[in-house]
Image (tube, rainbow, N blue to C red; front, side, top):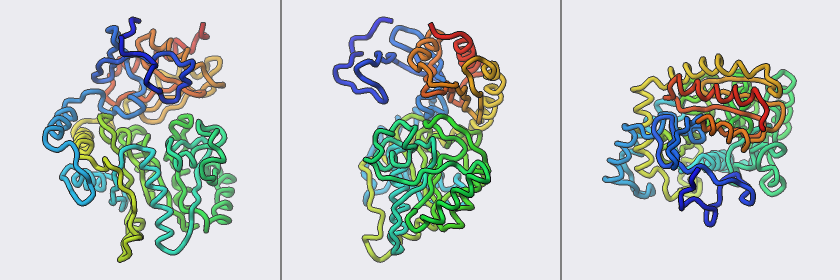
Length: 419
């Protein structure tokens, strides 16, 4: 591949990369639908949807038009003391779509910050009532973001932030209540430490960056039951699972569980621009209402609810209303189940699992991610394994033929060892 003159490592520090040994990334010059076009003219089918954001594919004309219009009229204005229609309309629409009384929307710019705000809300919820509860319960294989407080509720042993153990705040890390015995263990933990714990935080149905690990609807219901029993708040991190990825608009819909706080981001704007939201229940919101100014939530990102992001998010919600995204996610699920089944009995494969528009080939050991990625690129596919998983999270608009090309690339590549 001919390297364009701008592609070098003199100034850019890449994410999750050892810069001493990292290869140069692939130069992308444009993208449409489910395809990326490289500087040398090659096209890659995107099997990752740009870290799970591009639910409508790249360059959807409805979102592009909404962003262009807002860019001309009001791309940004501070949300402190000033208001704008796109932000207020988006908050009302999210409140109408979310279950229960999740209707108080606090906007931020990224998923990690949405989690930070949720945790800050939970601690201050108790402080405003005269209780000091500063600890959280999270779970093995959890990932909630890269900022400091979010890192503290990621898996401290197996997660990517394990080197920060002892630096970030220490939390209670438990096993998901996937059995009667594990539920009892969690029950005992919550009973003993209930006066220290502000909230329980979990990714409902799928733990994403912690290994694409699935858990049942019953796990979410058990967490709700235990939180109610011990008078604890429940936070759902739906940054990955929200907006159709698991086969429903939100994962909590399938579980029939309403958390006290929910975090949203990634596909919120259809992947067009950054935006996130932390949405609180009436119970949480009411704890901040007071004649005392210090009882207010003292948080306010500079680009909170910026009109350009809200316009993109409103356009994205339009598409969920007017185009069959949930049906498409369910069709992807059926196709992934059929076409990834070929991997189930291959040497080195432990398991194949599918949930909504998520397909996972679980390997028996950590994979050579860079080597596999290069093999997939040779086959015209952008698939980015990590840890011990090879996975697909394609745009929900992907064609059946392009999805088949992705699954075929995985099956053919895993069938024979890397050179």
